[in-house]
Image (tube, rainbow, N blue to C red; front, side, top):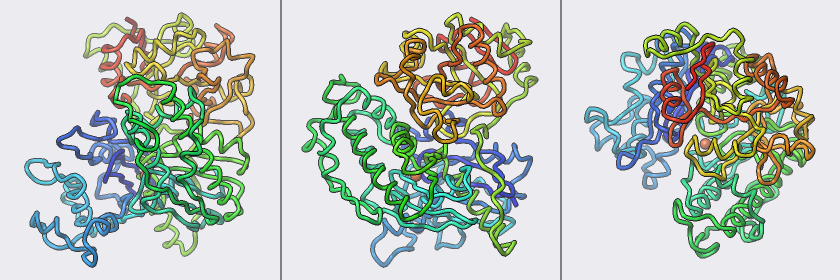
Amino acid sequence: MITLGINAAFHDSAATLVRDGVLVAAAEEERFSRIKHGKRPVPFSAWELPFNAIDYCLREAGLTLAEVDHVAYSYDPQRFLRDRLPDGQALLPMDLARHEAGPWESPWDPLFACYLVNAPHQLVDGAPHHLKARFQGVRHDGPFKFHYVDHHLCHQASAFLAAPFERCAVMTLDGRGEEATTAYGRWREGRYEPLGQVNMPHSLGMLYEKMTTHLGFLHSSDEYKVMALAALGKPTLVDRFLELIEVQPDGRYTIAAFDPVERFGPARERGGPLTQAHFDLTASLQQALERTVLRLAGLLRESSGERCLAMAGGVALNCVMNAKLRDARIFDEVWVQPAAGDAGTALGAALWIDRQERSSAAGSPVAKTWTMQHAYWGPGYSDDEIEALLKWAKLRYRTLDDVAAETAAILAQDKVIGWFQGRMEFGPRALGGRSILASPLHPDMQARLNELKDREDFRPVAPVVPLEDLADWFTPAEANRGEAPFMLFIYDVRPEQAARIPAVCHADLTARVQTVARETNPRYHDTLKAFQALTGVPVLVNTSFNVRGEPVVCSPKDALDAFFSTPLDALVIGRFLIEK
Ligand SMILES: [Fe+2]
């Protein structure tokens, strides 16, 4: 059974393809369109549709659209519209009527109206942009069946159907779905049971977004900057946040409406100076989030009776919060979907519908045969393809006999390398497929990388370490099965080691660690070990291969563009080395 999953109504447009419960391909549209988060600038202010990502998924699977059995869309537009239309006119197709598209006749129509409400200016050749256009020539009622799936159910499924758990509690937190902003569930014996949800306007994600805006950053994309700044401040105002949040014993919560200027003083202008007061405000916000989520997790632990927790939703990209949750030991293990933001709902939608349909055909829940061990689900390119491009571009390059050893030798000279290997990562983090690698041995490397990527100098850079060396450098190494393959948890740097890897130590001596198992990515792992052989340190800096304002590189051509427009010293692309 082939199921295509789509996220498209808002930001992080993406597509995934699942075959009989196993993920085949997943990618965000921004990587192909080269428009970050898929948001076109004002005045068009429209979200992209994942045409390229769909084409890529089909290509990867060797299929045509006609061979797809199910299309799962990670949002229910009818519920979205019901919110926005007058009472009693829940399904009145006013926007459709305005555009003379007639009444709801096909499953595409509510989606169409949703786009019109959501992105009314987005026109292609004078007609409203519509996902249906991509499916031209394929009847909506066959050969595939179309499904709308609740947004938070998609986040939930992207967690419990991808996590390495047979049973677990599930918590998803984001800005908002159709109505829900937080959802709880339980997965066991092959069955999923919802345990409750919190609806708009009460949203921890939107509270964080609101304060991100107040602090002069862009909401829905800069929250991780706020999280990074929190390490520089003291949580002096945490009670001012906690006074607003009321948690019920069943896990529901309310957040009182407030004016951030009245409550916390004037907003910071975008690009304006950052003061200690800003740091303290971010630290307070961060701690209020952590304390609230810990309470919610405690309640879910009790109501679910489960010992493991799977999480997703944009808030679950907050790796400082995730670490607090891990260290609180409320749950024995915490697993977070690497594509925790809305791109991951394309995966959740596909996994959920695939499972529902196969289970109903079998008459009982089918076994879970796949878990997400890595994030390399995007396009990959053969050495032949890469070399053809290098030749065509008349570039001087060298073919490496031992990629790991030669890369490590360059890194040991304090050079910064663009690293393009294997398939692209799904989700916002670069994890050794489309990375920039550098030595962590000197403290100035952080500033060099921030300068190279043209981004704020407070932004930390993160370490990658072989799985087997984690305990020598970071604590608590035993937590979560002793692994952190997706860079979603911070760790403490061992105090005796901090001076050896200054570039990756954040202000509070923490680091957002990625562990690499050799079987997952042998070339990446071997490079770390080769660097250790030269320097005694099995740790490298890993940051995403992109420049400010651009998505992570996807194709070899993107890699060359980024390489030649930045002060990167070398590019290791497949088996080939280009040096400046
Ligand atoms: Fe979401």
